[in-house]
Length: 472
Image (cartoon, rainbow, N blue to C red; front, top):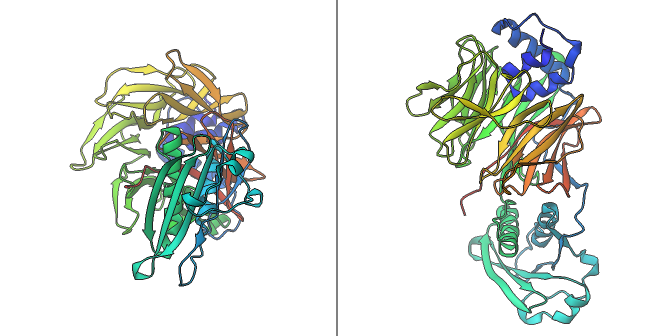
């Protein structure tokens, strides 16, 4: 007889992890699944397992750095003085740039109190000063007035040892968009120095919960990658799960229980317009957009057994991808759209498999650990992040195939970690964890040296999904 974890595995990978923690305490008759009873059980257990402290769902996430990288590059981001004649902007651009670079784990910014000089342009830079302060790079800038009541931010990046300017650029924005400007500056600095596009000017999606019992409320949220500027996408009195971004960042697919059974919706973030894509009898779960945005992978049990399907979003036609007696769920796409990675217990325990996006035989990908689920694939397809279980400990692990022979590494300390999601540049992995009786999010660098905690001050947050790049 399978444990209750197998039941949840049918419905959704995130719920799998939750119930696996109950493990052998709940048992069910042999694998003759009754979808209606199963959904009811999952619904009750989800309500019981979610911490439901009261919270303001529009509140932004608070971020704390909880790790460090001794090999991080020293960089000084000098405060960017306002040199206009109107009211100064409320946003401290330099502070946001500094915080972004620190969060990446690749840079170590000089504290403002240690800056003995405050240049605002290249002609004012005294290189010996910054060499004495042991800085490899220096960022200076200033904020000026722009037409229409906006601001113009001019900034420069210097290599201190070479006494060379690497970037000299200006950006104009209204006061409300100055945080966006700061994130884009941090992205440009990151890319120029490391040769990899930065992911600071991106967004994350997550689910919050509040209330208790019949008063429980859920919200699907979108916020900047640093937790600021939260936006409610949808509210519901029933659970919301598994947000998945469209490749253009304009829409979210998600699972809702608002009609009693699970259903998959796609919603436009800006307009609120949404489409009901799947509300078949049984399980409707695990939506994931294809890289071209034209198809959606999903898990359906309408035929009696949970299988992976692909829906053409234009015609709504379904193609069945898997067809066997095991439980298949939580599919995600390879970067080229040619194949799907998914979780299946066909070998006895949940593991990650790969199958052609047109169907056919599947090959097993994960072999380390007795439990691997929630696959997230890096933009180049070389890394796979999973929730890996051994005993009662569940941690985020990463399979790196970039060096030829596959190599596993642990990214999180556990013991109740789940739902990994790569940043679009694969520099970090966002995941959900349990701390002090409530859900929190972490972002960990791909080398596991730096972690950052994103927390709601008064509530529960989980089901994270890191969004794609925005259009530059």
